[in-house]
Amino acid sequence: MIRVLIVDDHAVVRSGLRRLLDAESDITTVGEAPNADRAVFEAIEGKPDVVLMDLVMPEKGGIEGMPAVLQAVPEARVLVLSMQDDPRYVRAAFGAGASGYVLKEAADTEVVAAVRAVAAGERYVHPALGAKLIAADAEDRRRAEQDPLSEREREVLRLLALGHTNQEIAQQLYISVRTAETHRAHIMQKLSLSSRAELVRYALSEGLLEPG
Image (cartoon, rainbow, N blue to C red; front, side, top):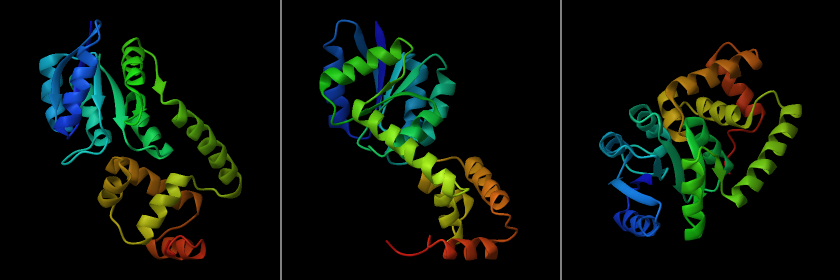
């Protein structure tokens, strides 16, 4: 029996997922949580095999809270169920420890199949997202040949140039503060910059601060 913990801030979504999963003979829900913090306690109590988790939730989102959940129940696997179809969210989710990613628009049968797949130790990505990831990777390789900075580093550079702190950047990009600090260090090293003023001038010259 596959034990599932449902983490979503909308009660109606949790209720619908519970009915969907409990209708399967080999799946049972062992708990629900409205946010990532509560998910830790529910995971310790319910010992789930799969944590079905949304990304965008109040207080603490899925990407930020996922490591704590996995630390609490190391044997569990996280399957993200989200409305976010941007490849950056998918990468961030897998970087935080997810084993699968399904869109909320997916058919019920796909959600069930994804739960079974990650429970069996496989990685699962919504087919449409897989195509987007391949396209995004190709675009990243093209940009890398022309620009020393990755897409994420350019995002961090722009926010730094706008005066945001490492903590604010981490929050906006759904990454840890340490990761934001590492990106900043790599940017300064790659561009041979030594001050924020030089960083701002570079961002201006690249048009990163222009609106739109």
